[in-house]
Amino acid sequence: MSSTNDFKAVRKAVFPVAGLGTRFLPATKVMPKELLPLHDRPVIQHAVEEARAAGIEEFIFVTTPRKELLTKHFTPQPHLEKMLEDVQNCEIPKDKLFETYQQDPLGLGHAVWCAKDLVGDEPFAVLLPDDVFIAEQNCLSQMMEAYETHGGNIVAAMDVSKEDTARYGILDIKSDNGKIVEIKNMVEKPGPEKTPSNTAIIGRYILQPTVFDHLATFDKGAGGEIQLTDAMARLIGNQPFHGLRFDGTRYDCGTRLGYIEANIAFGLQDPDMNKDIRKILEKYNANA
Ligand code: UTP
Image (tube, rainbow, N blue to C red):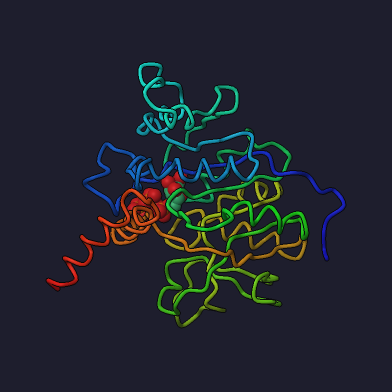
């Protein structure tokens, strides 16, 4: 076990939501991608609820003036509160919700750097709301447990097909017990020819604040963007760095097809809808 002596609990979560959402245009021309509904609530609310259930106390949104509706969703709306308990449940208390702007979408690494002052000198979680999960224990909670054992930095990990390695940050693996992966390097979107493995980083991270020092160099990486993967890679060797192959199924709401699949899967989880969705699917299957 390689736990650090200066173990600190993870209390804060960063939600980078300042991207352009180009893959969903024109739906996202004025509507933030993160407010599109997944089953009965906006995509972003799934990530916020996951963080809350994992013990997160402070919620930091890296957003843009174009998306002011996004954080508004988590503020009280008195005219609706009496109507639905669920409306109250999605509120974040005023003193626990923080916002900072990323003026230009220079990349995920830059978005995380924008949260530097709000995070301060303590470990923190990052949740990319596009990634949603159906799991018995939520993904971030599983990572919190791994963090208690291993300390340092933890990323969610999942095996993907070799062709898909051009879409993800990919782990170069030192040791692997099937669940916990010790990482010796990581590379952003390597593609099938160059990839060191087929184990990808999924959008949940527990990071030490030292990562901000590496982000502050603003080096551009894959796609000309300031990449979080490049800054995380520079932590390896100085701090424990592990991937956790989480239990559960991940859906990618950042693509149109993934978003449709997620809505079907979450709908099927709902006992009030399950039967009817199955009927609809059967109808389309029969006509295929
Ligand atoms: P994506 O790569 O999915 O970009 O970002 P996007 O803008 O959301 O969507 P497309 O690719 O144009 O369709 C992954 C996450 O990082 C955030 C996004 O909001 C998303 O949650 N992000 C990305 C930022 O906050 N700032 C950036 O500069 C880039």
